[in-house]
Image (spheres, rainbow, N blue to C red):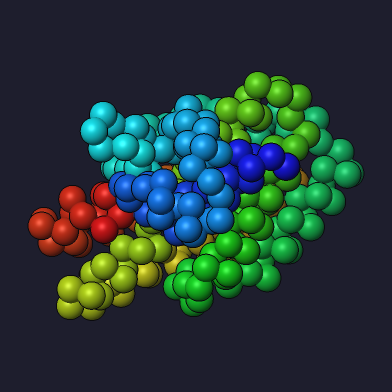
Length: 247
């Protein structure tokens, strides 16, 4: 792996996991100290990430982590539905015994993960992210459209940043004395991450129940939007701009 590839992989990992917060400035000196990589590979890696819309570059301000927003999440939610729904239906039509086994195995592994309301450590959330992505990838794995699968991966990566940002919102509210709002948002987050809805989606897919699978996927994709709107609306108005920028 070249130094540029190494820097790209490290930065991308921490941006998707929201360890580098939305809106956070990306200063080459600080990044070089943190990751042990020189300025030239870092600059090249940041340019690659800008092309993926994970990083922004503004004149006289330099690089920063791309912000998150309700409008962006609404756009991504719509895009995910447009791309993922036909992939799921095609996968259900084409999938055989190996596909069924992969879906069941991925669901079991996801069911063993702790969710953010119970364990908000980076390690626990990284594991849930990985297993959650693997479950949805397994559901779609029998589809034949390579381009749609590539689009789905790109959308999924962008949504992961929003998912991880949601886990930060209760901490923002708690720090400002909003315990009730914090509890309500954590309850909404628990519902969105719960295994039960994933189980129903798996069962509909394995039973080849197209109508039920379509409805469940639409509901499932909408959960993130529901949690985001709920979390944002319970923040004080003065905090909403800071939350949107990861502060």
